[in-house]
Length: 354
Image 1 (cartoon, helix red, strand yellow):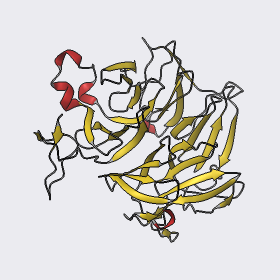
Image 2: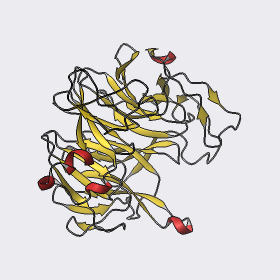
Image 3: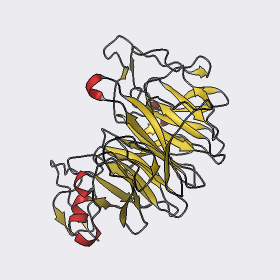
Image 4: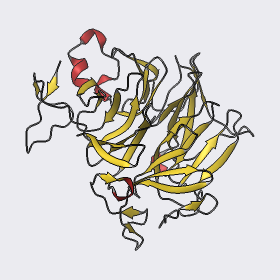
């Protein structure tokens, strides 16, 4: 098995010198999305100078799963956009097939459990174009979710940044390979800054609206409702207020997961917290950073840190992807701490992998 040496004082940027060893770990540098397969292996997308996806076993052994470095050594297995590979969001189906939003190449990748990669959709120009996957294209696919029927939902971006007309959309890819842009019940495209997404068993899509500072629910027929947060109330100088969903506020939700009883959990990178929506209440699950309401950052800020222990005393530094295992442990990609944290059902945060 190939491992990567970690030398004290030297940070390897997610794919450097190769050594053969049984005692070293593959680093997770700037971990973002995180998913879990049927065997409880974690997969983490890393965005360093040489991006990759790291697989971590239940016993904490990490290896490089997919990267440009590995695929340059397999000429017969290269995918067309290998040199642009920049993994962002990930989703996984019941057969452990992984789907990756490759923002670098503007495509959606499909990865088999044994690591074979193919372009599932996109890689045909940086425009929003619906239709069969043979002609459809994406601009900046970043976050992704999958429902029980294997429909994929991908956040994308339209408009032109040169004249400040950018807007966010959500694209849908059916199992039959048809790409469309999600619309509301009136037939109007939904435009908002969609981030992390997750589907429930009823094929409802729950979405973090980053700029709106809220969580939205989109039903299969296009109905949109607000699950928490006051959408669009504060463009700048946000606050954090727990309590009833009608009045509670937060700063910038990024990734989202559903609990076994339908609770909504999400990471807020500006609050450095994991937050829960349950029984029409919003509350902190983990994180205790000091919040700066003095205008130090007009988009919101809390003091970052790194501390394990009781959940409401723990500290994070830009928590991103989150996912549950079958035992109710919540795994958290702690972005700038370059590690994976674990929140146990009894409320203890520990460092699972670093």
